[in-house]
Image 1: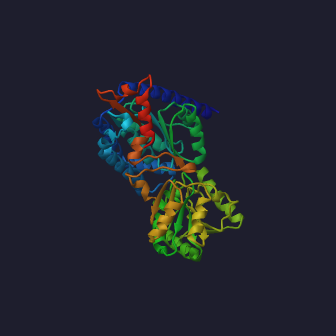
Image 2 (image 1 turned 90 degrees about the vertical axis):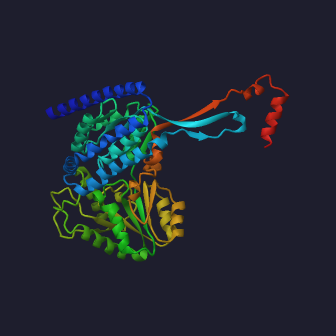
Image 3 (image 1 turned 135 degrees about the horizontal axis):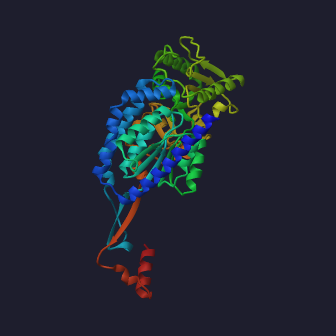
Length: 480
């Protein structure tokens, strides 16, 4: 009871601080509504030492939150990607900030028109637990590039990483510019109810619906980066060893706890066993041992571990073929780690067939023709990512034009997320809106259309009372 009271007090304190910071950021934005390119670049640049001078602390914090996260995965997927985003946004910013000239029709002559991108104000960012550094910093950098103030709510599932980010950000920025908030679910709910000028949420589809409802009360625009079941289609002739290597990059990273990780494999029915053998060999090569292997990332917490174990148990009970890859025949009890596992003959009445897996489990589905594989994808909710392996360009074009997904990799997995110059975002159940690239700058900006008339006022000829001249002009334009 005492612990619950203390937790309630901490959360109430966090919520009070959050409201105070929000008010301060709104007031500060009104005082400085359009920071220069130099000011924005300087603000973004503060993240470089924040990352590089604290690499060991970042690695330790994330690993402790996970019970074990491979250090190189944190450096690659969190630190390096964030630094690349910093470099990219700083390089492109002046170009993005330039007014875009647009054309006027004869009806608007004489005059000129253009579009200016104006900062929105205060942006709220809700961060998930799976990549807590990158998925906080990359949207923060993008929002700062667009000239905004930023508030970030970190996940309660990664408290050590959240505390470290809050500490380092408070040392590098005044609260009225950038602030980090930590706390439990009620803090996150209160955060989502603030009247931000834009809100970005990364997380599950189920929680995304709650975020959107909360934002609707304030008519706050939202960008939702959700999950979904990202398919991987293997072409009939693609070398299977190469497929296994390329899928491994997307599925083994963070033990599959990635929103764009391949969720299920659509494999030509005559090559299923070939894929099973190739995938088993690839996992064994990557992880000859797992339980005490520092390169093998654990499941983030007990709740997520039990969820994944439940999928496997139910699938096995309902007749699926479950293939567990455990090269050293280790005992995983007492560990937060889970071996890579393939599920064959999965049926639609199994939970694993509906939920985003978000772990080292993978469904393998046989198909007869490419049209059958495309139909299988299209009969299901639109995914965040789609992967297709085939050197045949016509087949690749067919998949691209016949399916919908947030993004696509051809002959690879998840690499598109690291390409800064293309948008990243979902569609339908996998999200809405996008950031990264110029689209990210525009997401956090107001595209303001401006028309300027010259000294000569042509509209005086069409003012009331309307007569023959007006009639002739209308007839002329309508007959064109």
